[in-house]
Length: 138
Image (cartoon, rainbow, N blue to C red; front, top):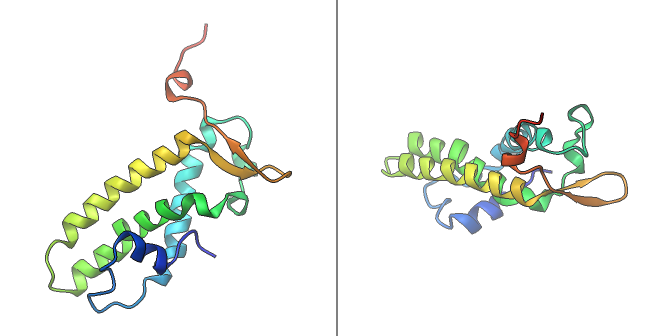
């Protein structure tokens, strides 16, 4: 199961299904893979609990990523499709807005800490602050 569903999309953008497309279900799994890729790139190197080789997306707490996944679906999949398949203007601007919101939300979730099942249930793993991560130690 993907991190989000069409119902979650509708909670963010209630009018998403008013333009002739009745489902974006196929895009949720695709967006999940993209979100997981970004988690591996942005979060895993900033903590010392889970090694990159051991990272398993099934150990993430799905509910923590619902909004991030919805923003990914909107910014990269649903709104570009609506922009090309309808004559309604404004989808391109909305697409850019949701792409920016995705980047912000992903950063906020990672900075707050990621719930990951380390074997004894979900554990909040807080990343190393960026300032400390970039510190040069002598």
